[in-house]
Amino acid sequence: QAKASGKAVTVTFDRSMTARAAERLEMESELRRAIEQGQLRLHYQPIVSLETEQISEVEALVRWEHPTRGLIPPGKFIPIAEETGLIVPLGKWVLEEACRQGQEWREAHSENLSLLIGVNLSTRQFQQEGLIEEIKEILERSGLPPASLKLEITESLMSARPEDTIAKLEQLRAIGVHLAVDDFGTGYSSMSYLANFPVDTLKIDQSFVQRLGSNSESDAIVQAIMTLAKALNLRVTSEGIETDEQRALLRGMGCDRGQGYLFSRPLTSLALTELLTNQFLTNQSDNIERRAA
Ligand code: C2E
Ligand code: MG
Ligand code: MG
Ligand code: MG
Image 1 (cartoon, rainbow, N blue to C red):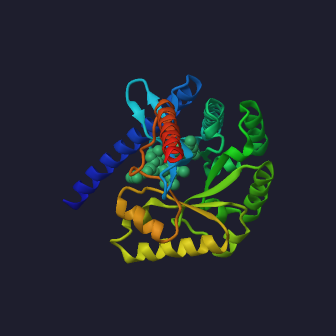
Image 2 (cartoon, rainbow, N blue to C red):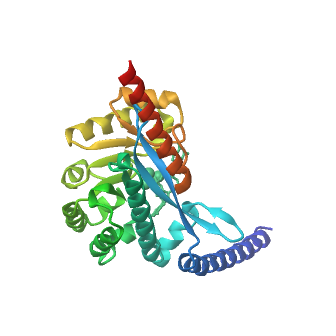
Image 3 (cartoon, protein in one colour):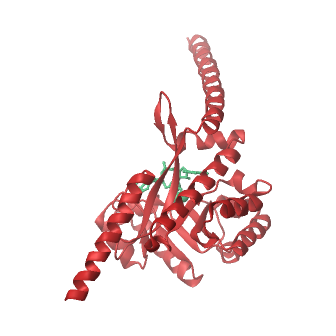
């Protein structure tokens, strides 16, 4: 009995392993084609002032518009891109497209001049040789000022090779780009290292934000991050804000910026252009009313 079922399990396991490996291999060649044939899209999610809800930044988030399977979220293909090295051409495309679009927004309306464009960098991409030069070239080609770009790195970079990481971050900072630590609080990073990292923003991971008010540990962690950020003179953005209660709690803790479905989901560049235009028109009519009053 035991032997028979053991055998059956082995067979199933082998089959699913083979199927999975084949699926991955197919995914890899499809992804390579997707990059070459322009099937990647960027969506942009606003980051707003928690007080005024004005958009101060947008984060570029990649999607794959698959010809038969529809829009594929990054969680489904970024890990494969990282494993296969495809993250290098993929990441380059994302940077180019985000910088191009960011500069287009800046040129369209002078009120967008202070808009920051956030781009995610994966660990492998960050460690790639020639990254700094590539970023410089992309910025020059697009015309986007370095100070309008914010690169989001993850905490895992801080523990892997801290000296190398610090040196690279210093170079990026010297160019003038902003640097943020994404998903902060989920990885291992020593507080003493954080003080040595030339970053200017911490993004509090959405897992803490979503448990706010219902889990006292999350409240304590978020409060501790706020205190730490203040001591190190870092800005904080809270990710994944979905409710008014979360927004109110975060404001109470001194967080001034947020991102989440409460404000907006990630949008196509066209939809975000409309949102920026509406914000401009609303501000303009507010000003007129104020002047009239
Ligand atoms: P991330 O950088 O932490 O991005 C935030 C993710 O949270 C996005 O998922 C966004 O859609 C989602 N999100 C925002 N607000 C809410 C909310 O209120 N509730 C919930 N439940 N989720 C919210 P998305 O677009 O699926 O991206 C997932 C991850 O994929 C990103 O996490 C980032 O790590 C990675 N990624 C996305 N684009 C790129 C890229 O161009 N390059 C690299 N290397 N990684 C990327
Ligand atoms: Mg991010
Ligand atoms: Mg994040
Ligand atoms: Mg995340």
